[in-house]
Length: 104
Image (cartoon, rainbow, N blue to C red; front, side, top):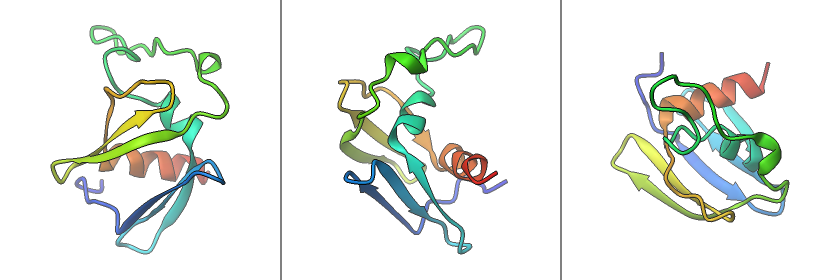
């Protein structure tokens, strides 16, 4: 459990199509934009009642990219995507889990 610790640094490398995230404990990862977009936790992408993901990954363009990044307090990142989707809030814990899963 990371207790929702913010990353030490977070960069959107648009040419590479990845977020580069470094954590205070020295771990780092590169997360593809499409992976992060497909993991959006919002009610448009995940059924609020069942928790079943309703977003189809094949519906997301391969060249998806962030067009806006903003912090939501000190606990999350809000991303506006090139497909005009922007309602997902990615907590630091969620991003950390994605980093860990991408390295296994």
